[in-house]
Image (cartoon, rainbow, N blue to C red; front, top):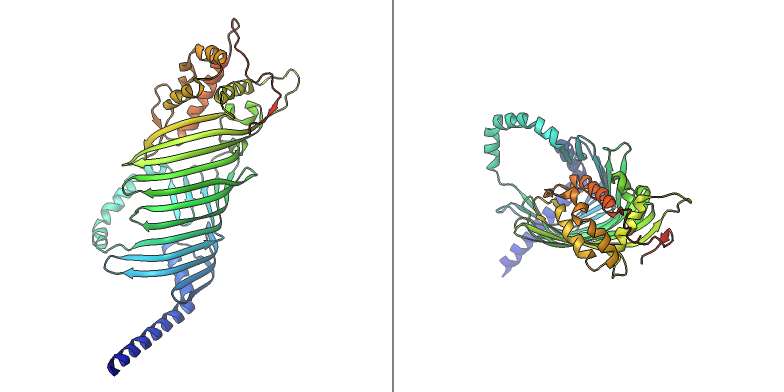
Length: 417
């Protein structure tokens, strides 16, 4: 019995001594090791106020700054490391007061120094060089690939008081869009082998000086390996003019005679075996038209009022429902499907309006997307501009028979709530 007690005592002493050695080492050398590793791998030395190990195995980092990434405090609860499967498990990671800044120009999009993606054109120009480098280093890569890659799994990641700033330098003047007050959590996340993980996020929005509290929210799960997902994304009461710098001229608030408009979007994303279906409900919560001088006319305002009149028919506010069918690994927008969705929305609209306007040929409205199949999100804006132009032509009445002017008798300011 005594030898068992002695054995346990020896084990206890070894654990205490070992933990004490690790505790002293991390608290004295951990900060320098972190700075050196980041500098060696990314080419930029970070600024770190402190790095400490707390009982039992909690690493705490304060005031970290490296390029376009910073945070006030990070707390990491270390789990177990299984050398046989090469997996490092972090039980809990908390980030407080973090800031990401992503910059996009005509050549690249970057989160310095962690992520730099060149434009498609530059990628093509360097393709030959990359192939040459790959062939010369093939032997080295083959030998190094035999080493088992360590995977990382985070059971629980908590975000608090974060911000993500996206700076677009491709326009004449820089455009800054900021997601503020980011909070949320990420569960069962693994890298580089992605498995099924769960996400929940909330954020405010600041774009072109317009701040919108609690504007964005997202929740759901993603199984990227099997191309399955189920998630919900919401945008609440976002000011239409917040992103006016990206609109074509016919979409800009001044062209439509809009002083202020608040929009909401509710999107359900469901994917099975890479087939992604996005069900969207876009609703107009409030609109205020600009005060026009006597004799002043805005064709865009007339077109907008007509469209809103069609979408509002039988409802308490204008609502447009849209279903997008695409692929999870390469999402795109099939704008030709908007034609059928629009027909569904106006089917039971005011008879005189539908008869006169749609009688001119609904096909003309969607001539801008005739023959258009799936396009990328970057090309969607240009196609939508064509849609708006054809809307204006379709809603322009003939001199012989003039359809009723929806909302023409209303004041220049109206609210839908």
